Length: 258
Image 1 (cartoon, one colour):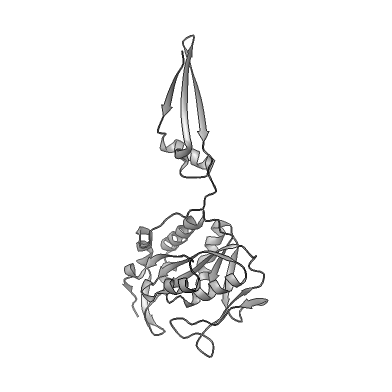
Image 2 (cartoon, one colour; image 1 turned 120 degrees about the vertical axis):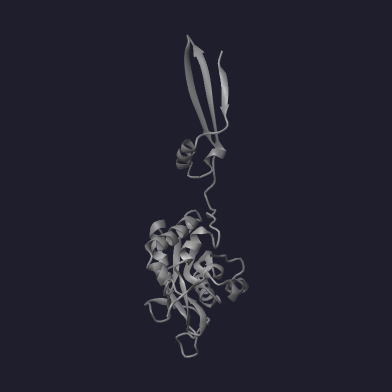
C-alpha cells in the first residue's frame, strides 16, 4: 500500500536551482514536491513529482532603498564644493576614484533594471556617458548619447532649456540633440545622469526622446537633490514619468577640501 508525503518547504539550494529553471526568485511559490513512497517486496521506490506554476514575464524592478547601505557607501566618497554659484555641487569624481564604490553603483543600477524590459539606455551629456555604457553592456542593451547641440552629425535637436547655472548659448540656456537613427518608435528607454537637481536637463531629454517616439520607462540618477524640486517639475511636463535616485542630499555630507 503506497503513501504520499507533501513537502511544504524545500532547501535554499533547491530553491536557487529551481529559480534558475523558471527564471524567478519566487520559484518556491509555484512548486509542489510530492514524494510517493511505494513498497514492493520490501523495496522502497521514491518518485519525485515537480510541478512548476507558469509565471509571467518579469517586469518588476529590484527595490533598492534610496539612502540605503549601498547608497551610504557610495555617498561616503562623493564630496561637494561651491561651484557655478551653487553652494553644494556634488562631484562624482570621488566615486570614480574608488573602484569598489564605482562597481557597487553600476551593479545596483544593473540589478534594478535587469527585469524592467528596457530596450535601450540613454545617457545625458556628459556624466551620463560615464554611467550609461557599463550598465548598457552588462544588460546587453544599446546605449544612446543625448548630447549638447552641435556635437553630433545627422541629429535632431530639442528645445532650449535652463538649469541651475548658466548654460552654453547666448541666452544662458542649452539644447540637447541625439542621432536621428538612435530611437525606433515604441522603444522602452531608461534615462540616466549623475544628478537630478532642478530637472531642466532631464525634462529636455524626455522631450527629445518622446518626440522621437520613445517610451520613458524610468529616469535614474546617482544623486537626487529633492530640495530643488526636479521631480515635481518633471511631473508637470511628463506626468507619470518615474525618477529613481540612489542617493539624496540627506546622506551627502562629505565637504570637499579646496
